[in-house]
Length: 344
Ligand code: SF4
Image (cartoon, helix red, strand yellow):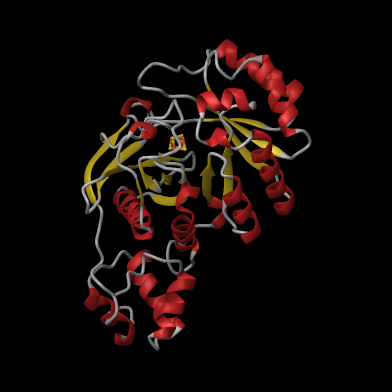
């Protein structure tokens, strides 16, 4: 049986064709289920005109169980805790955007994460598995329903929640394709960002496949020695190799590649770190996003305002490329980057 949310639109078209259903039936089915959130199978035929030839092959469509929703009193970020059919907890974050009435969604791609970044709560979770494409899409659909109930629209999506998206490459790309599809998620490709901590073969695959989504490569630090301490699993690949893949991506796209950098006081925000970053990046066109570390255990703290100012000044000297400070919100509800742990 088929779940229309569990593969890319192109794959669904192929499956449907094998059943003798035409492309129009697939478009109607995705519109009914994903765009309109219609789970009543009778309505698919009666209201949307999907042929029996296709609906007869659609199985029950499971949902993630929404257990809790908490809202930050500080900045309005919302964290949703879902429970999977096999009893695992995962979290999704609703991010208010500057544009009135618009929100973005931070999606999880795995339960837990095997990358072991030392500042990240997700890395400390024990249970780990890839999420199915439908489990990623269902996060988005439930967020959209919540947003719509308060008169808001979901205009973007970032794969920056639990997990390393490129360890679940095929399902994440299929989910992003569904979100971008004009008769499914209807989200602009440029409003969808996929983040990776630097898996070189997958970055190259992604570049070669020419996906329209944005890629964000998280460095951790600019030297192998510091990366080995902060992002130990990712550091098994030399940072120069990660940067070379980032450069190939930038050149293929003819655009700046987005690098993200988690700033940790006393660890990776010195003048020396800025110089190392400048040497690493060289003339590759980049945009560097700086994110404050959030570590509920208190082991790592964000840079002080003075430290950050000095680091940014040093980056102006040594990197000389656009640097953006990215806000990581929902700190009071453990919704910030690196704090998702399935604890609600
Ligand atoms: S920061 Fe991202 S890649 Fe690293 S352990 Fe956490 S979820 Fe995984």
